[in-house]
Image (cartoon, rainbow, N blue to C red):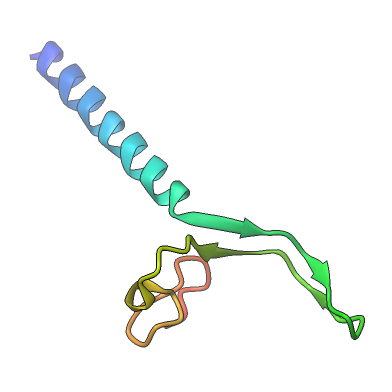
Length: 70
C-alpha cells in the first residue's frame, strides 16, 4: 500500500508541475516604465499574445488571475 500512495503522490506532483509550467508560459512580464508625460506605469503581467482576442483577461467574462477582476 505505501508504494501505491507514493506513486499517486508522485503523479499528482508531476501533474501540478506540468500545469504550472503551462500557466507560466502563457504569461508575459511587462516591466515598469515611464510614459512621455512622466507618468510611471507599474510592472504587470499580461497574457501572451496569440492572435485570439476571446481569451484576453480583459475580454468580458474572463478573469485576471492576479487581480481576480472580471
